[in-house]
Image (cartoon, helix red, strand yellow):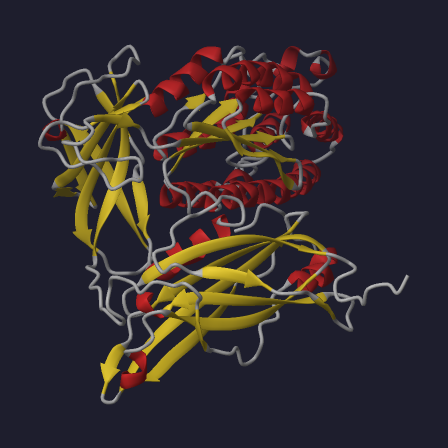
Length: 576
């Protein structure tokens, strides 16, 4: 789960950032000055049920595409793997406000309040990621669409709606982290209009390929040229898909409504599909050429994006910036070609996966539109007017996919739009996702009252710095179970670091068993358990993300801290 493409040349730098945890981390007992005993007795066990709530956001539309409001829980049917589920949790979002019907149970979100206390409260926060795919975009198409998006974010991103901008151009860069300042986002998008985009180069290589096919003496010669071109496209497409999945995976650990708007000139299901037809028309005696199209079909790669999005609760909206299509055969550079490119195959090839990714995640594909102002307003309607359904079911604790379907009872002419699958995530997967997302998005879940203390960095022989980190956890927050004259418990620690260039270390885990004399433990209510580690870092700004999980109760805390390592750390003060 990375927001960057790791290159071989960065290995040594990443290794320097990597965590060098002490082989034998120390655990000590100290008294925190002024600490008041916790109300909960030391070692209290909290049982955790394996029943979880699966939440689904549903948009309901009439035949004209208008959002339908006023529906109740009983108007919906939810099917998981074909079996109907009992909807136990329900609320509606109307005009950005949460409406909880009398007698209904709101979903357990930070913004939700009991219905009797607040029947009309703020909706969960919405986060919108604008993904500009400069690798596929032609500058003219991109800039036309971005001007619409600039106006939209200025008006729509505010209050509890936050936006983020990422740009893909063979490397993935966050151009603006989440903010509710729509004007700031608009300014960043305006800057992107002046940047290069590789879509123009892509169009040029297509024209060259057509000329190669026209000049070929045999079908085999033409096929070899297209195969070489298609392999290059597959390579770029593979990295593009990885960039999309990385962006989505880093959103998995945050709460609220999550929207990803992908702007491209289309993404091919089978790179080169229209050229196989062109070769067949050029060499009419060869009927085996079209078989190549199936070899290069990459639909399964896009299914990986869908699975990642549904697992992270991200709804995708895909925009084809090419807009209203013009027959490429009438362009000046193609007028001398001997045969015609099948524009239907070409367009279908570029649009099919955009539609699939959007529809499977509960969003929409915006195609054949030069002006996307209207569709952008529809996206806003989707996150300001929807229903949230929840149902409880036993979970296996494994990472397993499930099919979802949402239907409406006796509501002719209405359609329900929601994600069509989800991944049941195990505890380990959820923890890892949350730790990684903590590098970008603050997380304040800290039921164990974990605190971090950063010591003085010390230079090492390698030219990097060893940074001591102390983790404090009140004993009153730990669940240690009696075993004879002892009490025992087990903690899991997760660490990851990111530098100012957003290069991340590998995630490191440590397991620690706590064993104490039962009589000693009784007097530790006002004291802290300490865990000391040392981390190897390069000079500069770092962000540390840590998770601590009590394996007895499965309670997990997440904490983050910014660290600055000075190149002068550890040096003796000057005598002058």
